[in-house]
Image (cartoon, rainbow, N blue to C red):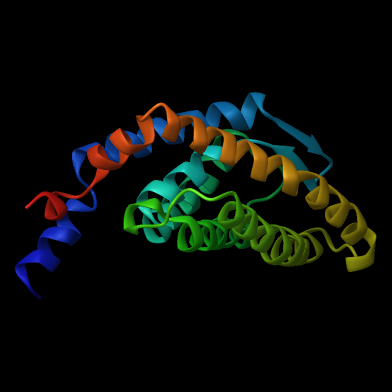
Length: 193
């Protein structure tokens, strides 16, 4: 393993990154309590994933996925809704992998409404409607057609809302130069050498 590669792996969890992940985790927890509307066991509409998407954009798909998985478990432990099911944790990981892969801003991807929309569309279709509906059927014994229509409608409503909110937050952070400062602050030491 080269020196740059070793430095890159050890600096992925720098103090700055850990502090940032902690702050985003706290924000995610707060938003899950006050910024989320639960409709039965099958639907959740809210903005508690916004910190996840900011992490995915700034830190990339792999740290974003790790954060998403950990936060799914932490939020469940703080506010359990039904039995724990690891499929939902896998969904959180997959959502971050998708969003981070398409939008990650540290490697030259510019902030783009199209990229955000594409990432959110893939998450809504494959993760929310596909995977999460399957998990609900397995967990609660419902037939697919009993819950699929409501999940499709909820995700069709949430798609433009999530896209607009994520873009607005990232665009505002970019315009105020906060986003570029965050990117510099979070950049691993290997990039400074």
